[in-house]
Image (cartoon, rainbow, N blue to C red):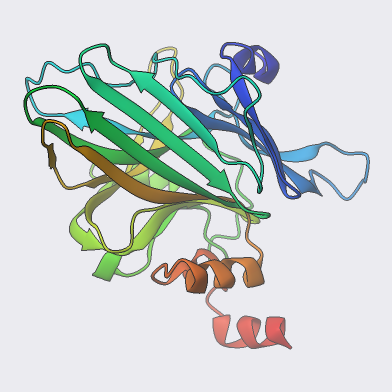
Length: 298
């Protein structure tokens, strides 16, 4: 299907900032439609704006998902890709107006997801679950970025990395090409990490999941080769520790999603503002960084 057909499959809450336009799908609560306002596909000022995120069911699907996993054998209904969340009738995500999505599982669990956005490329995602049942509920919060199909890369691999990228805590910078992550054993997992980020990068644009920088998490980079009637898919995610939410209690977790242009000043400012471990490494200065980086600042 076309991108427009894919967008039409869900009721949406629009996103409008000086840097991004797009929408959140109420079905699944996904951030799956983002267009870069200040960048075009070619130097022609009439060429289309760069599309970063796109929904499943259309070309070049690329989106962020946030959610909860239950305990093995757990009976509680949890929000999934088919869940239709509720938002206020006039909700719109702007730098001045956060948006809250809510869903009640009808069994005593109430979920709330609050998204707020700045002027540039950072979305804060606060996920909250209220347990009004009479017993403890065991849940594991997670966040995941999916990308379907291998993007056309520039082919300057020695100078510039395109593919999976991140700094999972003390594991340091990870850069895995699309082709490598599809190989048997090409994925990578990281356990017991604190701080850092996990993402996918193009030459000029990128997206990254940023967990709470004080929380311990398990992260991964994965790929699945194309199969009959299915294109290859890449994903990176983090999973926080298991949470036992007592009867009558509310548990809240907050993470961030970066999605936008790799503007040096903006990326460096985010590292400082949100205390993100080595976020500046999202920008690849290549093998000649000792020349390229000083020249850039010059």
